[in-house]
Length: 323
Image (tube, rainbow, N blue to C red; front, side, top):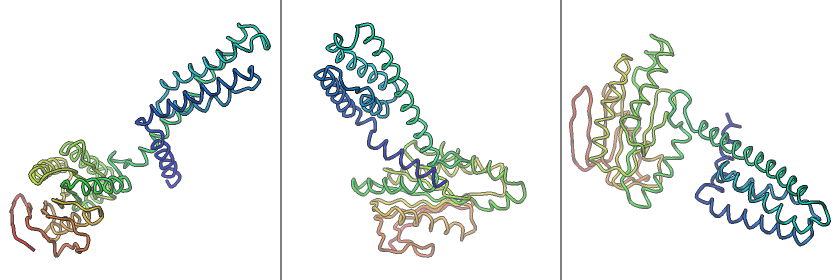
């Protein structure tokens, strides 16, 4: 697993360096290099074999843009080699030999471009697998914390509201013991599918381990968060209908002003989830925080909140008041 993560990190770093947003720059560098190599070959009467050096720009373009761009770079490289060799025909052979050599090089460049594009695709797939939970298909803990850090930084910078959910399945071990691990796996998959149906495509859903899930809701106002809670609770309850006695305890922390410390905001949602468990499990506890302040400890016993929504056993209350 460690080697898989290291491979994914390497692929991500290279993709960041040569991401598609920089494709015009990669093309400019590659075209410049090809023209420079062609000029050098022409002025030296093709005395130097530059076919191997030409592969480098082709590889860069194929990696950054895929096989289609690699084909275009391969054709450009072969044309460069053929045109720059015209001046050396009297010294080294007839035009048809030069053309045949050019076609041979074109096929070589195309093959290399295909291999590079294929390797990149496999690395991207491996990188994505390393970020996904194999059972449910949602993000894993590592990817969730990475996404949470980036979203928290962005929410803080632009002063956008931010919400975090922590979901724990109650009595999940009883399901495994009574009906087997297959039923437990099916319950986890059903919950992940319910979360995907209930939430926006911009929200981040992850299985944090065992029977725990986390959700990040960036740029969502309080009304939207309450609506998301309504829909999510209904979807999760429906998904768990066939997996008695399992229920879900859900803690939702909504911050009017986020902070860069994502771990603090996640702990707030976790504490709210434990408040529901302390009251008997199976329900939702949602709180409105005016500001995320990492200097203040967050526990299940004390939560600074002007507004709290709690739902348990289909009963919902709304309370207000300063801490």
